[in-house]
Image (cartoon, rainbow, N blue to C red):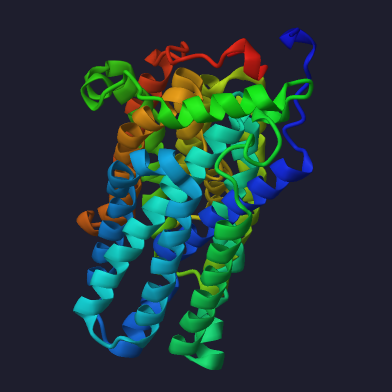
Length: 426
C-alpha cells in the first residue's frame, strides 16, 4: 500500500458530524461550568441574597474539579468515550434541575462541584479523546473548529440566560437546559462512534485505506497499554513545560474574563458598554479559535502557543489602561477573547503532537489535569487582589514565565506511531 498517495478528507460528512458533536459538548461545559460568573451567579446572588464572592469561590472550585476529574475519567474514556460522555450528560441534566430549584447555598455549591466533575468527563476528557481518535494528525485544525463551542458561550448563553430567568423563571429555564442536555445525551448514545473505523471511515478521513485493516487497528487501540506511566509523565520536565506554557495563559485569560463586566463597571462605564465588550469578544473568539487552529496546522503547535501568549500579553497591557479610555477596553477585549478562542485546543493538540493517538490518554490525563486546574484557579484569583491593576501586573509576570516555557519546550514525537497499514504517517 502506497501511503504517500493517500489523501485525507478530514472534513467528510461523518467527520463534520463529529466536529459538531464535540463542539456541542464543549459549549455545554463552557455554559454550565465556566460561564456562570459574569451573569448567572450575580443574578442568583441578587435574587436569593447570597454573597457573590462566595459563589465565585465555589464556581472556581468547580472549574478546578473540571480539571481534576480528568484523572478519574481519562482511562475510562479510552475504553468507551461515548458511553462515558452520555452518562455524564445525564448527570449534568439532573444537576441543572436541582440548580434551578434549590434555595440552599450549600446544596447549590455541591451541585456545582458535581457539574464540574461531569464536565470533566464529557468535555475535558471524552471530547478530547474522540478528537484524538478521529484525527490523529489533523487535530490542530479540527480543534480550531470544535473549540468554537467553548467561546460560543459568550454569544449564545451568558447575555441571554438572565433574560430567560426574567421571562419564565429560574427553575423553568434550568429545566429546559436539562432537556436540551438529555437530547444531546441521546444523540451520543445512538449516533456517536468512538473511532472512525466503527463509523465506517478512517482516521483523518484518509482515502485508499483498507477498512478491515483499520478496524484491526481499532481493536489493538482498545487493548493498548501505554508505556508512559503516570510516574514517567510527571517526571518529564518537558511535559510540565508544555502544560504550564499553555495553562498559565489560560489562567490569566480567566482572571480577565471572569471580571470583565465588574471591572468595567468599577471604572465608571455603564452596563451596556460592559456587556458589549463581552459579547463582541465572544464573536471574535470564534475567529481566534479557527485562526490559531489554522496556524497550528500550518506551522506547528509550539509556534501557535508562542503567538497565543504574545497576544494575551498585549491584551493585558491594554487592560491596565482601560480605566483611562474605553478604547483600551475594546483593544484588550478583542485581542484577549480572540486569543482565548484557542485556549482549550492548544494543549490537546500539543499532547497529540508529542504522543499521538495511542499514548494521548496516558499523557493528557495528567497534563490536562494541571491545565484545567489552572483554568479554575483563574476564576478565583481576582478575589485575592486589592485592585484590578495589581492583578493585571501579576498576570504579566505569569505570562512572561509562560512565554519562556513555551520557547524552551520540545515538540518532538515520542509516542507509538500508527502503522503504515492505517495509512497514517506521523
